[in-house]
Length: 281
Image 1 (spheres, rainbow, N blue to C red):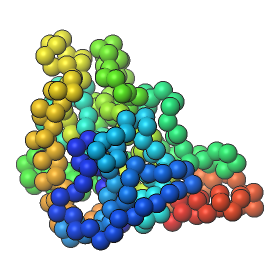
Image 2 (image 1 turned 120 degrees about the horizontal axis):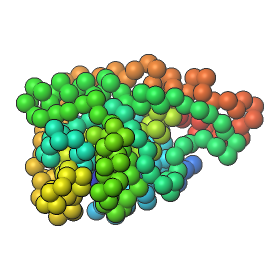
Image 3 (image 1 turned 45 degrees about the vertical axis):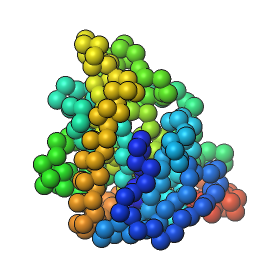
């Protein structure tokens, strides 16, 4: 089943026929809100607003582990996120849609990055952290609709909540990053630990602050001047994609924990065995 993670401005899915609202707690705490299960055009989906109802959670306050675990427990095998991003590349323009396929973690250790630890040891490969099948699915749809779209990009995740300095913006560009945002890490890596195919649609709102022209520098006011139109584009692409067959998650993603867990089953507590069994589904 496909899960959709709504980012800034996407607190619900218009046209979603709601079947059930799932209130859930997890071994890792509470998710950002209720999981909405319903029918969206041709497919059954799950939906969760990353920042909670009314956008009440800052990026470092989101309980990413609980969000991913709750979606997996509800049956998700794929996760498509939506996020506002800044552009670090001149050809990736504000108003465009962009899907990263690599990640650079520039956060500061305030977030819980893994399900593992505290007696359960595992090392999961994230060399290619994004599902190419999900990116292809959105890419094909965007081009059919003639929407400006970019892929094969690297997303730098910063801690926030402040907007970055010009020195940081230049550093990330020199490191080979094309996009900057605050929310996709550790979400992308936790999805891999949960054996869920993951991709995110970035809604490009600004050029961050690397350009010399100060009128191009990111501000919350400038972000929201463009964001509504960009969100409408993203929603149109999603609606069109949802009228096509869903992609199949890659087998290597759906078996990511095979050989990655080092702790023997006999060493696990009942609680550890139960949450690990959920991740392996």
